[in-house]
Image 1 (cartoon, helix red, strand yellow):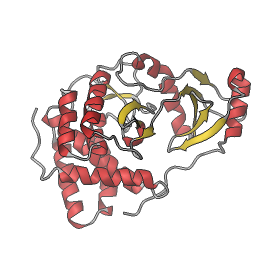
Image 2 (tube, rainbow, N blue to C red; image 1 turned 30 degrees about the vertical axis):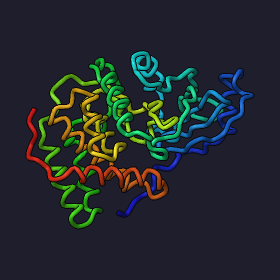
Image 3 (tube, helix red, strand yellow; image 1 turned 180 degrees about the vertical axis):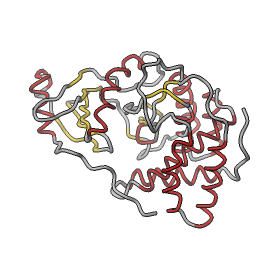
Amino acid sequence: MDPRAMPAAELPLSPALVRRLLAEQHPDLADLPVEVLANGWDNLVCRLGDDLLVRLPRRAASAALVAHEQRWLPELAARLPLPVPAPVRTGRPGAGYPWAWSVVPYLRGEIAARTPPADPYAAALALGGFLRALHVPAPPDAPANPVRGIPLAGRAAGVGRQLPHLEGAERAAAGRLWEAAVAAPAWDGPPLWLHGDLHPANVLIDAGAVAAVIDFGDVTGGDPATDLAVAWMLLPARAAREEFRRAYGRADGATWLRARGWALALALVFLTHSADNPLMAAVGRRTLDAVLADGPEPGPASR
């Protein structure tokens, strides 16, 4: 592969900026210690005292994602079986910073990209049940997302650019899978609520078990196959993926094949955009291996 770097921050971000924003808008929190926890594709995340985090978008494209979390996550959190970081305070532009930002609970655990679950079958049950609860019809004003929850064919241009970076038999197998997944019957139900970006860096593991799901900036409505791709991204064994599918309970053959296609598309994204992020590059590699390990592809799946 010839990976590229993740998107750069569009303005300087630092703990000092966080302190200025807190002093201006939430002065009762301004004396708490601030420490950088993570610097991801979309947000700078800082620990705030013992129990809170501050999330600041790094790019203009990410700013709307924070607004989506602020609007919808408190409503969704009430019916989900795992903790999620519903904002406890909201921030507005200020102190020279141009976008909305949030204060959210600190949820204990390490990201699954770094610390896999101790029992993949228990993790499969937890995540399958979580998505079963999340995937209910979304309202008409749910956030639109041009790249998540859409028909799988909408990812074809990116996959077409990225597949040539694979070599030999691996490229041929991935191409066959992609063709089969795109040919599968499309989702014909109502748009369902989706996390939109469910991968191992957005799942927390504590004491070996799935403890929380984080980073709902891409929340949207659409095809549930988008989220079901996490089966290949997190669960290395095919038997664990089947346990996940049973726990979810609503993935027919076409949906499962589209989910595998989504996992392939996301694996290629991680492999080609993580030159400076070996953790996410490794997620891409493991996902691609899992997707291809499931064997020869069927023809177009039926419902």
